[in-house]
Image (tube, rainbow, N blue to C red; front, side, top):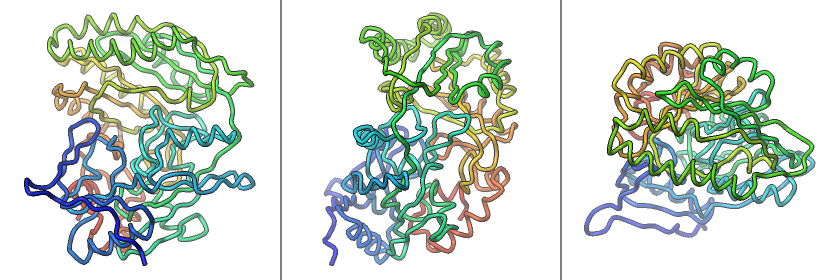
Length: 445
């Protein structure tokens, strides 16, 4: 018999408040449950259903949407963590859902293994990152969810469902990126490969040049991305390609200047100044965009793909057909230049190949991502509204874990398999045990 999971219920002063990382989403669940086993999680789901309470699992709160918010039972899966199995013959690793990506990367590296691609931060849980579509950039290698080879899911009736391309394949096709709508993921099996080296080349480049040469840069590099600094014609590019090594990481002084001082310490200060004095932002942007210099370094993947991010912000990101991305970015630049907007954060551009996940932002098409950010506490709606108007005109799909205003009607028009996901949700969770206001908006009632 399963033991009762650790439960924290509302106190006399009312329910405990949960906030996401950026602080733009808050929720007051009736109780918070921290199951120490899959059996405890199943019991928590059954109990919630009996009581008429909705259930949502939350990772580290790095999503900017209310995908995990609930007034019912909030499940914290952090006790369900760790590597469960490494299968070198199959080239896979199975991990519990609450495992943080940083811990997974360190554990894999210790065994001489690595994921093929990853995003630029690694503070999320594996289930939270994959369920919302976290991705990096890649010509041939896709999102973290696209590297899943099997998963286990607790469904609304408390069953544990095993899913792969051979077992419950229709659920597997959707649940790799399920936005928490199909059940609660308990474990994930990822494809891995022997540890390898990446050589990163970071180089400033003008906006006109990088946008004109975008397709060329994508074709010539395994992983290409760039950042445009609003109010300037300046960009910073990054190319990551496999190499024979050996490791040649940035020197300690260079790493501190680039990654800590300019990207975190000074960046925090200039954003605080910009929030207080918006008129100063264009001048700051011109200085900041010239502060980063060219550098080349080589290291194992997670040390190249990821960077520390301690300056908090709010973000919107849209996935566009890759052939439309540069036109959309040029239009965004023109919009910023003719407006009174003051933007202190760079705009990020990345790519992904087409994949076969039902509601992946790259499902069925070559994709380029454009992400816009605003410093936490700074009014962002005018900027994001202007950007979203442009992105939707070009057939954009919003990132499931980032700020957007789209609804089910719009999303059904940009996802050819939207109806397939909705039908599966009706079968697995007809009473919407795992529903919330966000899912009602983006998936429909």
